[in-house]
Length: 443
Image (tube, rainbow, N blue to C red; front, side, top):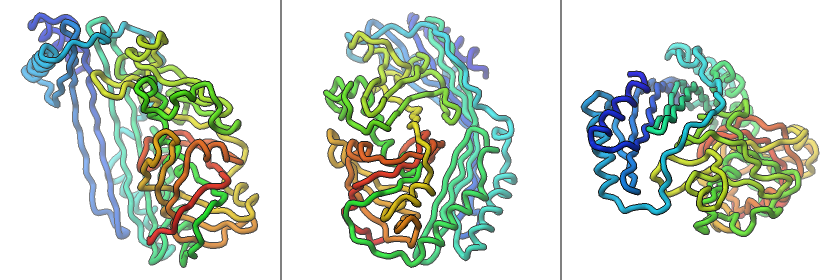
């Protein structure tokens, strides 16, 4: 069913209940995944689903109800549920009227070849990647997924916004008896992925890290590849939120407008960046604005939902989540500007350093100082006299982000980076001095 026809049914059901103010989000996805392990494909799954979420405003109250059924009876039921929940909730003195229509820029992120990808096509790409890893005497495991999604938002004030995009992801781990290597990439256009090159990178890391040495923990110059930068730096962007700052749960409290990072750190939220993905409007129907989050190490912009903006006397930035919610808003299209270096140049310029492929099991230790702990994995190397000399046993780290981003000595060109614990973002590799490894792990 077309989303505009569906919304007309939502409006009819609301009017029948005597309610004029409603909002509807219509989302759908069609995703397929090919999974492999032990050098063989062992699973191919596909899922197609649609979802309707309705929010009603009644006498200063609001509530939301959702369903995955889109027949007329289900639409009437979910509208009635949203209205009943709103009437049963407490009034909210800060509740705003529904958003008004706004112009927004479209982002061309749907590619037919990706939407039409087949199990056979994914299997052939996986088979080529497995051959690379097998040829190195290693065992491969990973996933190759392709899919498409659509997201539409309507309300009774006349807002009508649509976005659709495709996405492909390829991840591979190459394993030997005492080492492993990893590589991952994502793109709206599957033709932008190179599974063979990713397999070659993972196999090379597994080969180079065989017979890892145990190196004493301590403070080292560290070279973080883009995925590792994402894994760690990506932990802080929920704090770039006006609601979080107002609630006193952001490390940016009393730090906006101050220099807390190095002068070479520039960070933006830019949904229209060519390497980004996602809808160009938020969960409230507000177009996303480009934000300068950090400029020369100084915190500049934070994200505002409509409610947070009204309370602060500011303008909403288009980073709100669907209401009602407890979080308010956050930037989700992070772009960390890079420099003119590269991982190879960083290695060549280092007398002694640790090269890190990625991080995992990351936990926050101190939310105001933004200190995190976690571990390296799948490719950790010792650099000596400008060259990678061996793999090393993995480390646990305890590191503050303000210190880390003040000690960044070199940056590579940014790229779309994929990690396991945070959203994808555009990030460079970083060479950072005095990074603190607290202990050697057992694996």
